[in-house]
Image 1 (cartoon, one colour):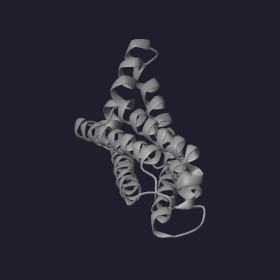
Image 2 (image 1 turned 120 degrees about the vertical axis):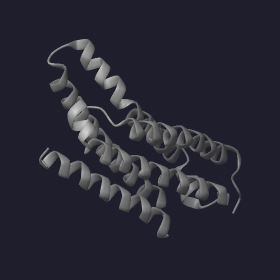
Image 3 (image 1 turned 30 degrees about the vertical axis):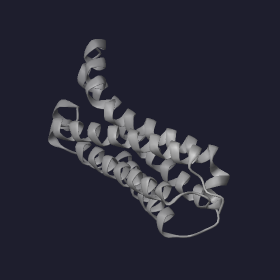
Length: 176
């Protein structure tokens, strides 16, 4: 598979999203939540482009047979959809608790769990990127089993972490 503008685009979005997300933990600015939101959004866009690549490959591989197309999609898109769902949930939390996050009146556990969640997300996107570029994906149009299983594991862990972040934001805030 030759490198196309499509591959370059989702790779660039991933790299910029990862840099912005990591910057949100290293710089101290007044509106840090906006930087995190931009990073998460860029990661979602890169994963949506990879999903578009999977849809395109599944369509070509199915030769117009609907059930084969659905089977390929079902086997290939689960980890992507799980990770996108977690990111959307975290974006919802950031939008809902924007003022609280920007004020800094949060327990230290929020920052710890948020960093762990971001690192897991970055690991998943790296797995997705390398999984899409494997020979198995090019030949069978699905992620290799090891990539798929590890992505599900990281996704489930990240779901738990996102729920913990929600609990911290909802119940464990400080007054300054």
